[in-house]
Image 1 (cartoon, rainbow, N blue to C red):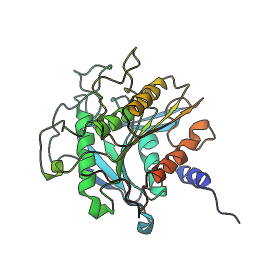
Image 2 (spheres, rainbow, N blue to C red):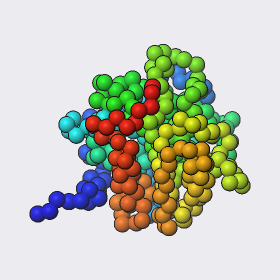
Image 3 (cartoon, rainbow, N blue to C red):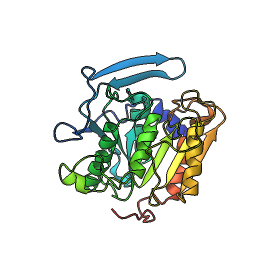
Image 4 (tube, helix red, strand yellow):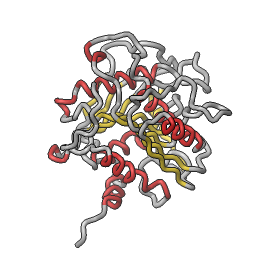
Length: 310
């Protein structure tokens, strides 16, 4: 019998409702006490279950005031590639689509020997931050998350120069803001973790929002692209009605013109929130294309091609 191709293995894994990663996650508080900056004030943390014919059942977390990291280590230590990703679920800075853009992404990464770390960042946006703006609290959380993961590199079997960040929908903005804004902390130093670099070594942005300025073919205000921005991978569907594909297209051109290593995949159809689902729709191919891209960067155990200093 011929072995199953990687796409088939991914389909089988993601059809198992995340049971492969549910056993022993490590959950860590992101901050030693009250997080710096604004906190949402809309009631206690809760989970909302929402079902749609397009996306299935989503477990949505909201009212997060105590950010955490949920860490999934590959079950087979021998297959640990030494690469890790911080996962930023989407939700418009209002909610976190926890299973579809968190746990399913973690299972996909574990399947490929990567450490998966889901960031539960603070939502919803504080009352003083309107829909058209991006709140600062999640950016603080993401910077702290990358530093905390890097500080645990030896303990978790991670190469400290192979720590990436991946975000879906508005999580893509958060991922890119982290990958480009590392030169300055968004908060005052709290402890030794903040002495560790918050620069991701690569960034993956899935059907992102807040990349393009409103009514202009320019990048979103507040984003800037320093010359040491890490490599970026962009994926989007052209028929996305929630976050138009121009978001990724404009950012691709900006990154390319800035001399930043970038790869982009645009699909003719697929809409929004396609995640890593293997449902025979066009975006089903992007997870493997992303793995190919990571491999091209040398993200295997013996490679030293990602050599940014930290």
